[in-house]
Length: 523
Figure 1 (tube, one colour):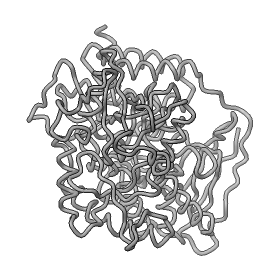
Figure 2 (cartoon, helix red, strand yellow; figure 1 turned 45 degrees about the vertical axis):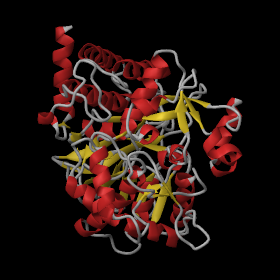
Figure 3 (cartoon, helix red, strand yellow; figure 1 turned 180 degrees about the vertical axis):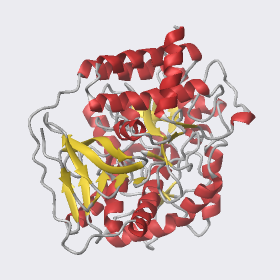
């Protein structure tokens, strides 16, 4: 049995953009960051290619950015949140620049902007074409390493929240790189910034560890979840057999790349007035349809970029080289893949969850910004804005310890624990892709809930797997309840949007399990 520990530090679960930014914003308030891998590895933020959406050009405005956000969100965006986030965007770009983020600039020093799907203007600030996430992360990691108030526990993962009444009072952690018994860290407050849920699906662009665990253990502690049914599938994951699937950034289509099928037909022209720059859900469904009919979809960069694709988009060039694809001569096979979870732990404007002393930022949060369909490159922006707001609220709510009164923690992890059953994980992921993926219907969603109930019952002591099952259950239950198609949620049996359902969803895990129990009894 591992010895419980107590700290006056704020515990931040995660090590991506939101976690790093919040830790720096909290300084000199002492922080303990829980990172399942060495800093910079395995975080979704580092894999983000497009950039940060912000109205930086003189011809653009925060209001236009907010309007595009609401339009893409298909009727369920919180207008107050969209106005606030887009208004704050510029200041965050300037602050990141001051920290050393090497955003692309032109000869006059202006930010080079990319246009991505559903944006009415070029407003995505980028780094080296498709290197934004990695480069911003490296900048922040350097700052975190140099900040004395921040302790990072690497190769450590969170498993469960400890609560007292309606308040969070600690978090259970264990080694992420080998089996160990969990350790309870009692603390004054917790900020969850541990990523989304893409890895719950068999085809995903997310890092291997991003499988809904953070949302799941918050839900298991009683936190309210919002918009769980809205999962965004990226249209252009490179179809080369890798897991996770490498991403072909939307900025390529912003630069003029087109989508063609095996017959050479540019199929998006007949699907939407904006063709390849239509909202992601529309492009993803069109690509999925081409795949289903055997006309392999491909991204064609040859005319728009030619040989420049190799230098302007180095991440794509590296992917193509690994897969034996020459994008200068050939079109790039693509497929849809689970990419971003618009839903998550419900948070208010200060990043507070429904449980006291629990804050959330980044993809694990559901703030109301994204609605049913996230606007491209708003993900990193939301992470920045809510990391700062949560940090400010934590500092205003909790009394910081006296200087030097929060020593570093060095948990002694005893032997124990268990390895996750890899077969059960793959069964869960395949179930989600088959029944809760791009296209859904009542029969499939009920089959998913039955399968999830059986998978959960077979692994009653695996905390990490139970967290995955919790999030998957919430997604499937909310998808079953929403009898319409909207944004990233598409029902074959309800293919039209219902104006009466143009609102966010809210559900607890207890409510989701009750729906699951009713379904399993009926089958």
